[in-house]
Length: 283
Image 1 (cartoon, rainbow, N blue to C red):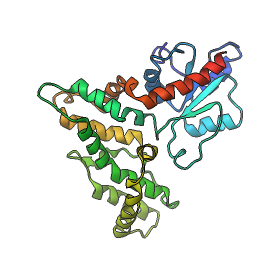
Image 2: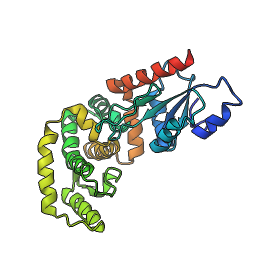
Image 3: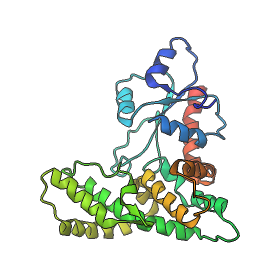
């Protein structure tokens, strides 16, 4: 049964229900309501469909707090976005917890197999777009943003939002406006009384760029925010398929990508890993 039919429970809700339903289904705890809507489509073909229910943890920090304080009173598996945790080697080691392979769940939607399958869905006899071309354009536009996120990660004093900022503000004419991104960073730093200069930012960028080019694909996915990748991919698809995307927004495009999630080997591996832990709880 879909969470669209019944609202997903919170951890507190599920804790309370366990006293009324001692043999209640295990809970798969995810970070938020949006995660439930996406992961439902991930698990639509799961062999365990109907044997567990999604539980909203509200945020990663609140889930981890409940886990550390042993405040989860029902059988459960926790599914968390890796964010920077895997990159920084700070994931919790627990039989109850599964982390995404990449930064967020949206990274699975922007893998090559999913992009390729989705491209074919929109392709017509008059539009012939190469998947490698789409991916190359995606990576080229995302790279400056990711590099500055990495630089921010290395500077404790950079206490402002960057990773969580929608990339829309710096993306026009199908291209990331790097100068505007830099100006935003400088403005935010100056609010913190920083004396940072544009010249020094560019120097930091060039220094870390050499390291980034040597990262393998897996490592790049650990530091590339999937939501930001998806935003750029939407604009790229819109430019390649203007007629099909004339009335389409990012949410409907996300659904288009989700329809092809089964073509992504890493997404299938994630599902299997969660299923294994859930099966242990069901036995």
